[in-house]
Image (cartoon, rainbow, N blue to C red; front, side, top):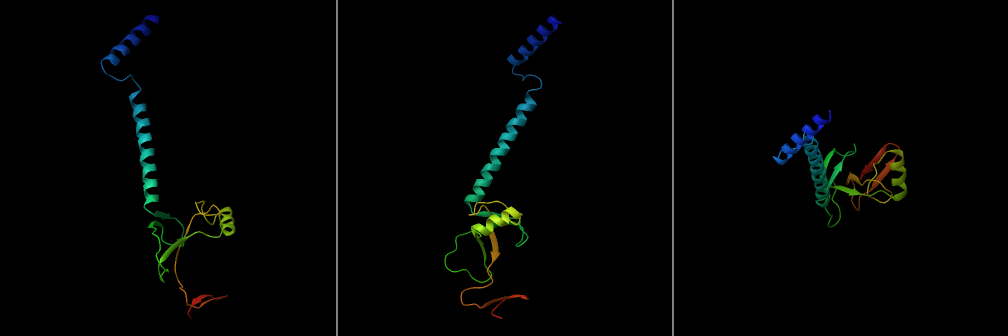
Length: 135
């Protein structure tokens, strides 16, 4: 048995000197390198998307998907889509109850994405039947 182990070790060493990988090692090393590369690439994509102002909406209040968020210059127009953070106290309750996902806003909630339905000068009425603007 000892002689067999020596012969096996010598044959493995000769294969290694010839440039061959040890048996069973190539696959694991390749998988580890691919996993590390995929993790790095995913991280770069996430950081790049964040830097570009991209926002993923997964809530049912607006169409699900990737949105580009830009800085607003001037007052918002009716029909524009805006993103904003909820009040701290409201955000904490919303996250605790599962209404909002955790995120970077004050109160630990994700930003909200909503359409503008009223602008300065509009009359907004809220009653038991719903909400109306200028109506």
